[in-house]
Length: 114
Length: 114
Image (cartoon, rainbow over all chains, first blue to last red; front, side, top):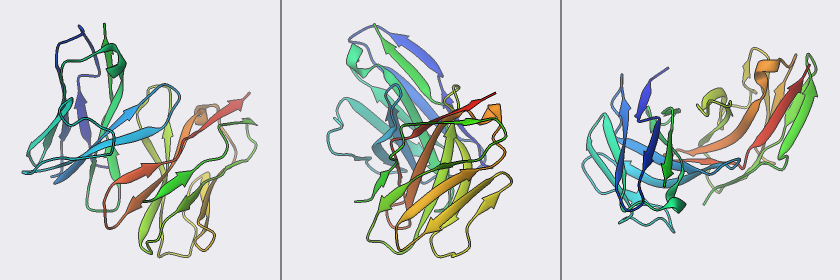
């Protein structure tokens, strides 16, 4: 299957700073990527849809100024958590669809804001 | 909007036995995909099985099979000859042809006991 690489796998940052998470499709072009957030023992909640060359589409309740998404190329989408606070601590996962038949997931990023 | 419901937060099964995980969904669309994903402690999302809605035949992958009832909007996963390595969170997911984004159920934590 296709490979999606997410980096970093773990990050600790100080409250008030920003952190960037990268999601790369290694062997296919992804016009659309997705960002999910997962709280402990809970499901994946879609945050936003990242569209190459255009603005991301955010789910209701997700602050677009807090979670900046950039999809500058067909193989890279980035999620920047700006002015991070402890409540932003979570597990973030990206995915990319190859066509409409399947989603391929990154390894996830565990963000801890101290 | 599509919703996916998994009504079993936790399940357990003895090694070598069979277990069935339930999933129902709600949609007004006629064309879509359904998936079961496994999330082990590493939190990497692993595709278990996929079903195209237009196919009446139930998908099978080795020890994993589904019971897809389109009219009832039901999509259960049967795991035969359960193995210790099957212990994980299992998520049922819906992928729309139109929106191309994936929606997840709340998950079922499966424990295979020796």
